[in-house]
Every structure is written in C-alpha cells, then in structure tokens.
Amino acid sequence: MKDYRELNRQYEVDVYPKRDVVLVKGEGAKLWDEEGNEYIDCAAGIGVANIGHANQKLAQALYDQAKTLVISPNTFYNDKKSLFLEKLMSIVPKNLTKAFLCNSGTEAMEAAIKFTRFVTKKTDFIAAMKGFHGRTLGALSATYKEEYREGFYPLVEGFSHVPYNNFDKLAAAVTDKTAGIILEPVQGEGGINIGDKEYFQKVRKLCDEKNIILIIDEIQTGFCRTGKMFATEYLGIEPDILTLAKSIAGGVPMGAAVCSPKISIPMSKHGTTFGGNPLACAAGIAAIDFMLEENLAAQAAEKGEYFVSLLKNETLSKVREIRNLGLMVGIEIKEKVQPVLQELLKEKIIALPAGTTVIRLLPPLVISKEDLKTVADTLIRMLK
Ligand SMILES: *Cc1c(COP(=O)(O)O)cnc(C)c1O
Picture (tube, rainbow, N blue to C red):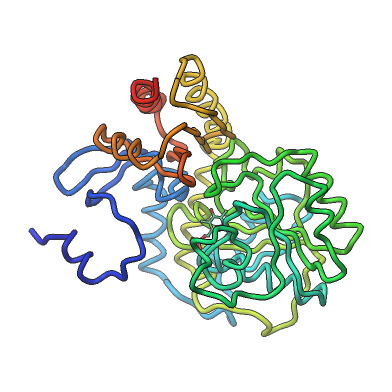
C-alpha cells in the first residue's frame, strides 16, 4: 500500500495543519480510515455534507449526469442548470429573484462584492470582527483574522470591521462611501456567535435608509444547518445578496450569489467557466430534493436541541458556554481546544475548532440520535 501521508507531505503545498488519519470512505455521519477504523463525523467536510456522506440519491444523480453531459458553456442554455436555478429560487427568501452560480464560497463573496460596487457606484464595505468570508483577495479583505491577512497586503481597499451584534458601532462606521455591509447570521469560524434578531433588523433598516447593499453570508449556516433552510428566517430580514456554498450541492463544489432585483449587472461584466456546470447542478437538485423530502431542517432543529440538552444537563467544569442554532454547535471551553480535539479523535470522533477555545460541531444532519448520544457522553467525560 502507498504511504498516503508521505505522498501528501511531499507534494501538497503545506497550508493545512494535518491530523494523523487517512480518510477513505464515508456513509451518513460515519467515516472510515485506511485501516478500517470507524469514526463519528462531526465536521461534515467543514459544514458541507449536510445530506450525509455517500448519499445514494446524490451518487445516482452524479452518475446519470456524468454519462450524459458534464460541462456546457455558460453562453448556452442547459436543462440541469435551469432546473437547479428554479429549485434554488423556490427555497431562498422571497425577495431574491436571480442567482449567479460559481464554484466556492469565496467566489460567491467576490461576486457579491463586485456586484455591490457596480450597482451602488460606491466603494466601501463594513464587515464584522471575527467574521470569515473566504481567502481570495476580495473575500479576504472582508475576513477579520489577521493571521489569514498577514503577508498578503495590500488587500482590496475600503474594508473596515466593527464588533458583531453592536448596532451603534456599525452605524457609526457608515460613511457616504459605504456600498455594502457583510454579515454572517451565525459566525462560524469566529466561534459560533449567534446573530441577534433586533440587531439584524436595525441593520436592514439602516441599509434601506442609506442605500447600502446588505450581503448575508450563509455559506456555513445555509441549507438546514441551523434548523431552518436559511438562518435569515430566524432574523426576519431579507438580504439584498445571499451568498451560499458548502452544502449547496451535497459536497460537490458549488457556490451562489443570490440577488434581489436591486442587483442588475450588464452582460459580460462577470463570469466563470465552471460555475453552474451540469454536473454540479444535477448534484444540487438531488441535494435540495433530499433536504426537502427528509425535512432536514426540522431534523437539525430537533437533533440540535437533543444534543445540547444532554450537555446542559451536566455540570461541566471545563465549559464556559454552549451555543447552538440547530446542529451548528459551539462549546466554548476554559482551555485550548486542540488537545481536546486530539482526545476526541482518539475516541474516534472528528470535531472542529472555531478559534482557539471553541469546539465546533457540524455533523451531517442525518446523524443518528445514538451517535449524538455517544458524542455527548464522550464530551461529558472529557469536560466534567
Ligand atoms: C467556508 C466559508 C466561506 C468560504 O468558502 P470557501 O468555499 O472555502 O471559499 C465563506 N464564508 C463562510 C461563512 C464560510 O463558512
């Protein structure tokens, strides 16, 4: 057998800190390594595999499409793209009318940033401290963490950051040049910080008054993760642009910037080769159908509550706070998170960090209650 670790170390640009496991197979919320060890997955490819690994409906759709047509130029119509767009637009907030399809979250943010500058004829953006919006230069300019930005300056001009959930600080940062405000409904990378409904409603009103485009980044919160199809449903607001990716196509790379009628862009002003390709669109149709048929949003709400109630029933001396919206769960601890994640891995549970002190759990939403109980019992043992 090849030494996969060694091959990776030899040939991959070394940007990812690695855990010492070679994952080769998945099913539902289970993963297996090359030695046949079984894991409970609470990462889902970082919030991607909401419909579960090796989903049979997704696999069938990919197979059927792969032997039919994988790529079609965006300057032609395509059956799967039209059907996917129709499906996507049937589930997003009602004020949104058109989508630009791309291949990743960061590309969805780039589209949102460019569209916003174009339609407002203004230049500046305000985003939140601890916000994460991607790694390309525009999206990185909206991302807060200095560790990600350092070494890449100058970034795109005109971006500033204000404390999350603080309306006065945000309002004070607005100028005549402010084109857009960029916010996550729940900050994912930033530590599972849950957006305040009143705050978001005030932000919406401010944007209306000052002709500012409100860009809501649901790349991580979207597609049933938080117990609703989209977390904006909790906030009672309508975004001008909604950015999506991660679980949109069940694990196949895809992104989208979904726009209200305010966003009108002339022909040839933006584009992508792969965006909205038939293969990804077929996957997207299968993924959204599965979410609706299985009522995955209700499942996420119920399972999130079940899981968190197991933890909250115990006195956990190492825990500062538990925060969740559906199956987007953050456990803030009083010590560094990495050793805890290593311990969990030894117990065959895969979890994520969010910052330095938050355990982030984003399991596939099809996870069984039995597996959730195992994860909770293990965490309780470790965090007592
Ligand atoms: C993951 C993520 C992104 C970036 O998506 P990529 O597909 O990695 O480019 C942007 N915003 C949020 C909230 C994310 O969670």
